Image (cartoon, rainbow, N blue to C red; front, side):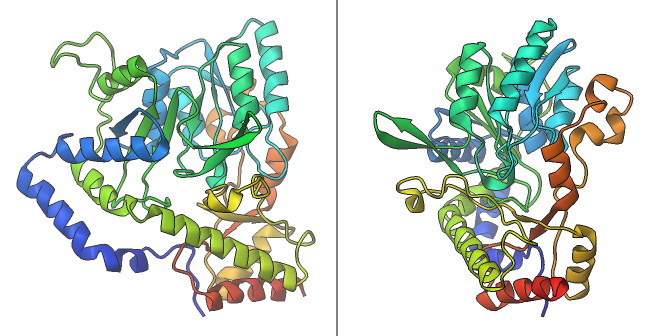
Length: 394
């Protein structure tokens, strides 16, 4: 049996005609740069996330970069973030001239640990370092502990940029007056940064991104900065970039957004099936550590996207050998991520960044393995994945 890590064709087939029609409309309109298709999609994403503004940009990476630039973050500044995520989180900080200020991640969720973050922030401020923002990542489709991180940010009057590239639609439970208030990723900080890379739960047919915000003035700055900082045209009070979302991507994503909730539900169902199958195989805990679902036990969680499973990442001993075993037996898998950010070669000369140790993150990098989780997987495929893993550990 063949079980690819991701297969986009089953998702495309029922939407093919509608997607082609939407692209044709953009082509016929000749409105290729920003225009109605982009504005429509921006409004849809803003409404979906519970934000006042959506600002379409060219990629999730540029969403992060524009968000940092729009806070005037630059040389001599620091941004508090996680060392365990995709490179763009650190790369965009470095591109502004600032430096990442890392704190270790929580066991289980592998998201930024609020306790570690507070300790690192306090030490940095005592050293006189100019910390300008907190940038948590909602890793693999599960929100970071935003209640505690936002409280930390308020205490030190720091803006929070949510790296929600893997988490559109994921929800976080706040306790408010004895009830649970679920809020979507991207609506909690000054900015939420999304990627529409094809492998995401909401993926385009190329690169694309979005920044959400409920701060009116900040949203205006974002719009200027995605278009070379121009306002009005040809007058540049700021230095921005060419970060515009392509109209064809916006049109395709508008079609797909209407199906996103059902795709989330299918991914959660697949994750539940995996959990049952791993338990029945006697693999849970040892040797297979399953992904954390930190908010699944909150009252009413089943009615909310407590985890959207952009990836289903297990942690295992002999990870590299298991990966080869799975590939040999036709099961797609991937390592997210083999190195922490402070271990990357490009920062080896930055001793302030590279000469650190984050034990939880480093252990995760040594043991992580992502399994197929896309919505269209069938029960036989899921069972085959678990059977193949069980065969390796027998």
